[in-house]
Image (spheres, one colour):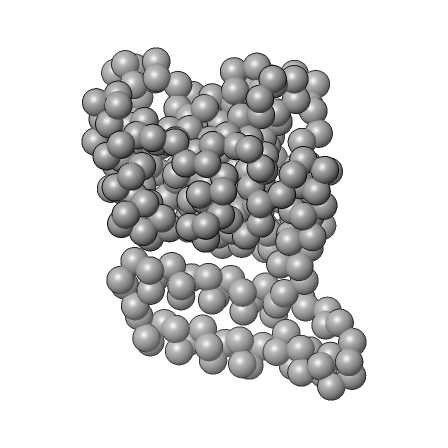
Length: 263
């Protein structure tokens, strides 16, 4: 189940069950604020996820237990900017790595999201939002020009007008606004949230992993303006010759659910 409280605050927690990995931000008393150590932990966890071919879906969520108003993540700890030993591009590396993950990623946005954490939400393939939350990017209010990868994702996901509103006014977006901008797969109340996320994750996990992951890679390339027709044709051919495609055809003819193995 989502939002299960852990015993003590900690860096992000990775759990794996069947074909689904769940990453949970776990500092609810600090509104799940991220520091440099958390970012390195996330990079290590992304490597573990990519190295495990059994993982088909990643759910990215947060522990919001005990918060008066749920906050998915308050962003990057401002004190980390003054650490001269830190990598100024670390947060961008994390967001880019999340966007490039092999499995399909679902952001279970069970609270408001601020600062750099908004880019982590945008880096996920699909998102389910909780009613009543807000989304705010205060970079320019703090005197900061945002990093290129984040700006590109903002324009790709919110459109140029939405990105301008986010950065040039620093005003928050409501959950309803995100829904109207088609940034959310679903927008539901607390009573429906876990079931909605679990249903979406289950549907994705049941797709042919070779096909869905190859298609994700092609869509990323198209969105980045790096269309490689030769690579796309190779992916198309690989899926057409796969065991999963044969299984999909047989299941369709037999009117049963296919059992895909990723080969």
